[in-house]
Image 1 (cartoon, one colour):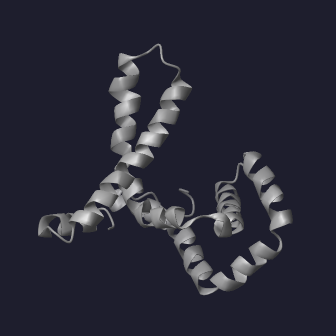
Image 2 (cartoon, rainbow, N blue to C red):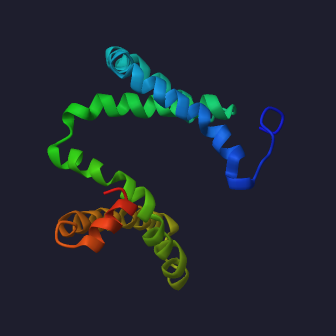
Image 3 (spheres, rainbow, N blue to C red):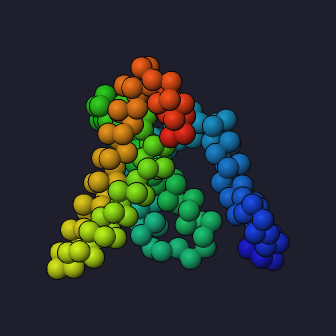
Amino acid sequence: MGAVVPEVSFFEFSTAIEYSGYFALGIVYCSYKQAVDDFLRRYRLFLLPVLFVLSACLIKVKLVAALVGILFSLSLSLAVANRCGERTVALSDFTYAVFLLSYFPQMLIRGPIAHRFPEVDQYVLSAVSFVVGFAVPVLIGMWVVRMKKKSRLVASCALLIGL
C-alpha cells in the first residue's frame, strides 16, 4: 500500500483510503443491483463452482481474492435466498448487532474458558465460540427490540448496536 497511498496512521486514514475502493464498488453494486443479481442468478451453475475453487486457491493478490470471495458469497446468497424461511430473514435485522457484540462472548470462550479447560479440543471450543458469538448477540438484539418501546434508555442504546 505504501507506494500508492502514503502511510497515515492518524484516524486510520490510510486504512480508510485502502478500503474506499470496496466502498465505491458497493455503491456501483447498489446502482446496478438488479442487473448484477440477474447475471449471477442466470449463470450460477457455472459461477458458484468456479468462484468457490478460486476462493479456495488462496489467491495472493489481496484485491482479487477479496472480490472473488465477495462474488462467491453474493452468488451463494442469491442461490439460497428462495429456500430461506421467514425466521432466517428476520435474523438479518441483527447482523450489525452480531458484528458488534460477538467479540465479547467469543473471547470469553477462547480466553478464560479455554485456559481453564486445556484438555478440551480446540475445534470444539471454536465451534462453541462460533455458536455463542452468534446466539448471544441475537438474544440481546431480540431483548432490545422488545424493550426499546418500553424504555427510553434501551431505545437510545439500541441505536448503538444498530437496532
